[in-house]
Image (cartoon, rainbow, N blue to C red; front, side):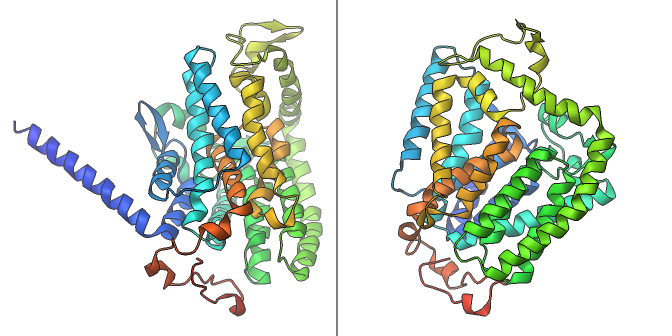
Length: 436
């Protein structure tokens, strides 16, 4: 009896704590989004709990954010593709042709962030979302630069789940040089996330100097990841966002071009030196990605091909690829089959298409377009996967729903504080009722 009482008290205390957190997140949606962005960029994947299966901290918080900010939003074609994908893979799991790990990964790392992107603008203004992601990403980039020059990553000191920690905490080198990875557990993931974030920095209403400074900081940190995918997608995202995002000034565009020319002249010798020192490691990495295409012979129409790891195809022993398939498209095909992959990729394409029209264009849609090349050279890993699918959902929402969704639903107490951005020009600091 004596033991039961403390346990009951702990249970009541835990329930009360959760209730308080939910209440605060509901009452202060903009503050809650800042917390979410900080967890995304600064809390490693190995921080989480096992409840049936592993829930990373960012996954738990994202699910909670969906619940406390849930709103009815107009459905779009992308939603139908995602729902169809979920129905199909759940059915395939029932038939035993999709394993539990793949099912859970799709739901937690793709669908939940997508849903959060679809509802986030219901209670939080697009400008606040843009500025928050921009600021948090710049801070992450600064920490990455410090990590490079000090050869110290503080995030690996954070304890967490054993298997996940052992997988993602070891620091990487290329050519004897530390590759920056921050809290993302992998340099490729950090590089891709910073590349996506550059679109949000460009879309802010900051003054010229802070905005250019932010872009430069992101670019430097991305170069220091020594990830070719990150560097390529950064350039693509910056070019698209600089010349396509509505409202970007001519001065900023000229400044980006000048900074790009100077930065390229400085970065290329450094990159060549590191990749030259890496020698066979860097070349082997590229060859490995090409060799992955042999796995396409194993792809089924529905579901996974079973135990392909022990097979030999031509001159290739497929077990060689068992540890890592660094190609998001091929890995998705292997896990779910052609039809489910077509369904989920259709949703991603819907988000990318939003970039075509001026009226539906957003930093989120441009961030998605910028990542399209990376889908055939890297896997969707750690927080990068969640950030990408959040942007997919956000791009769909932003395209047509933002003006209708925001407004009266914002909490009055927060509205009275205004949503002025300290980096914005004075003329852009008016607090407009119904916007945040």
